[in-house]
Image (cartoon, rainbow, N blue to C red; front, side, top):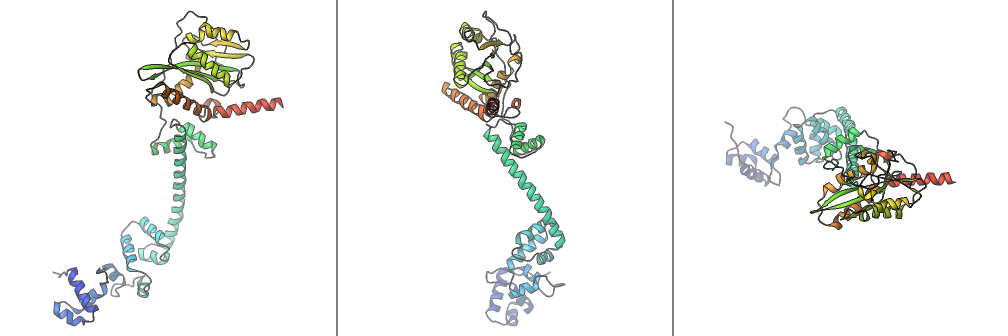
Amino acid sequence: MRKRYNKELKTMIAELLLSGQHPNTVADEYGIHASTARLWKRQYNRSGSFYRLWYLLINPRRKGNSPFKKTVERGRIRTRHFKKGHKHLLCERQERYEFIEHHRGEFSVERMCKCLGVSRNAYYKWKRKWKEVTKVESRTATLKRKIRAIWKENRKVYGSPKITKILQRQGDLYHESYISRLMKEMGIKSLTRRKYVVTTDSRHSYQIHDNVLDRTFEVEQLGKVWVSDITYIRCNDQWLYLTSVIDLADRKVIGWSLSKEMTSQNTVYQAWINARKHREITEGFIFHSDRGVQYAAHQMSELFRLNIKVTQSMSRKGNCWDNAVAESFFRSIKCEMVYLNDFNYFQQVFQAIKEYIDWYNTNRIHQGLGYLTPIEKERILKNQVIKRAA
């Protein structure tokens, strides 16, 4: 059986030989062969470590000559690099190429390829392919950062269709299915919850007006047609009532009110006053709503009757599609904001609605507007008026 020696004995004998003692004398004292003592001396270094790999690479007895033998003897390559190289000799070819790429500033490619048993042509072919893959990965990482930024900037409510449109406006042309796949990989999606329920109380004895609008939702003139509706928002143990007024031309919320009571004064009237402060109405103006008691009450009917520009219009009974734009806005605000929060105070609800409507008017793109925001559509329509006047 082959006799084994511990590291301490090897170190002591190597130190003795380095101090000047003859190998034969030391070998006789410790019962080892002189050639073994010389080998330990060659393997030994001042840190007290023995590198078998060093011996395997430069020992002239091994078959063939090491490709690094001459370089080692000149002292241009340190022992630690052979250890790195040997580690990679047993790795996959891909990892060998990566090792060469990462150390090409220290050694020549030709010498490393010989040592690691790969051809230079194969390495350079891998490098070209690796650069292309790295470039694609870099583009994908950049695109993912853009997707996440758009998603966060828009209250995390945009899905792949709208994010795709935003990217296209920025000059990044990708198919929606690809954006959807990346969003799944990133673990992000449109944060909307629950189903929106339409609620209207039309059980009253007030006058009902005809459906003058008749679902003509495509309007190209600001201040020509406004639509309005009322919805409920729970705040702690009570209900709050949100009234909105929207201009069909640019789908902008030009007036709104939030109240604790569902009277005409605190709902429709306040929203109407706020809307009039922000935008003028034109000849032949239509104000459309559902048949709710707040719109049919004497206060609002008289207000509209006394204005020669205003024609009041109401949806047909039980037909929410006649006021689809207003209903769509309430669905958006509830699914994208209200249902994602728990409100305890009136002021908390008021501030949240204000922030959402500001974002809705300035940043939220609308499919019905050709994926423009209301403020962008407003500018386009105003420019058209200026051009016609000129």
